[in-house]
Image 1 (cartoon, rainbow, N blue to C red):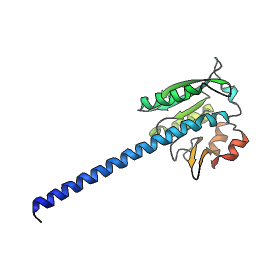
Image 2: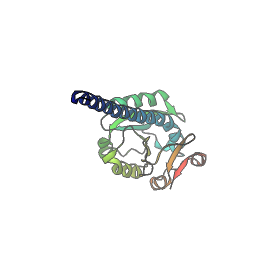
Image 3: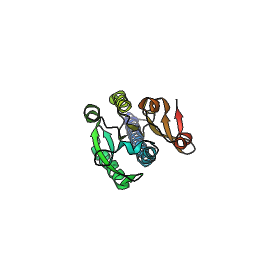
Image 4: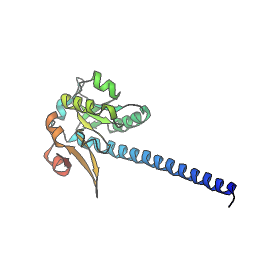
Length: 188
């Protein structure tokens, strides 16, 4: 084989490697989006399981729900529209608001329900602490967040189950219905 042919094979090999890496990245993004979309479908059921839901209404009688994001406002808007289309949970109208992680940490003591549209990364502990202090029902669709202290999420085994951090639930003084706790997977 000549040097030219070896170079050509090497170039094609590099191109194939780069394409493989790009396709893995694309499928990782698709996988994360699927988790987020499953999470936004489960989130209302978690909210409905809150025994003190009627106490969380704002002055206008609406249930405040916050969608938190860092960079992807487009995704946060899409999730907001999805929740807004539900209109109400347990006959309480929803008021969905989109905030950045920083806005939520610095300006809101909400006592409501919060959905993480993106992994909070460097904000994780601040958001968890804030949600515990405010008794926010914090939900994350991202793997590992419940184990790190987020109150709720979901787990995939032979079926999709709500996933609860029992320690965080007690710290935040959130009371969920017994049946919901029983059918959920628990991290203690």
